[in-house]
Amino acid sequence: MRLHGHQGIASKPTRSLPPDLSAGICCTHPDPALWDTDSSIALDRAKQRSAIEANARVSQAKAICRGCLVLAACLEDALVAEGDQPGSMRHGVRGGMDRYERATMPRPPVPHIEHGTGGGEQQHYRLGILPVCESCRQAKQVKRYDYEAARRAS
Image (cartoon, rainbow, N blue to C red; front, side, top):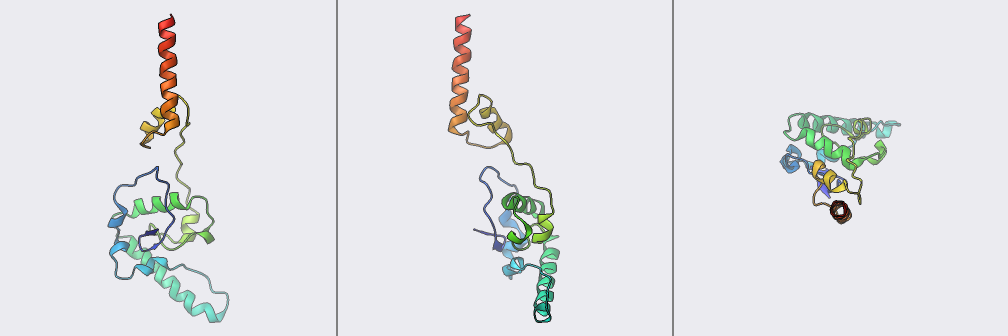
């Protein structure tokens, strides 16, 4: 899946991020590969020049990101999509940060739903995770049936 001119990891479909991330500067930039660049520290002289060039490209991508209207949504999308992956498993510049900077950011809380319980359906609506899953829908029907049966019995 291509996101913002770089290789991304699809985020979980339980979350929608306004505004539309396709409005990002990186999606219309003439050099989308700029966001593919990863900074690295050269350990030997042969790699030193390419590392300096890579770091310059990362700095350029970050500077462009700072003027983007969807910067915060892009960063949130990256943090959710990458989860707890170490910095070495992340890729490119997203949300104005390189992979190492994103690795040090705290993860946003993942909404928790107690699926298959009477309150699961309400949690779906409260968190905006729609449509309600079948197990929560059925649990709500059972809870409603039990409540009405108890009311009729008394």
